Image (cartoon, rainbow, N blue to C red):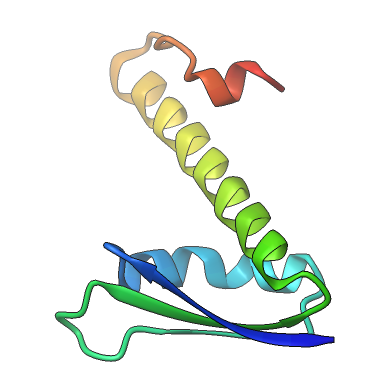
Length: 92
């Protein structure tokens, strides 16, 4: 098991809240997401896993896909029409 600290720049508390549940779904034994100051644009992620950076990449990809799906569903709800499918959704 490897414990790594990875800092994501130009992001913050919202992304931390978004990705937190994904760690549990991938059976990550320990993970933390910290924004050191409310005005900080850096998210510090600590992961205890055999492949920390690969795990974080997968979590960020899964979260982005879910946000795209949610955006498409909201668009249909608001307009009654499907929108052009983003490239990442079309691959499924």
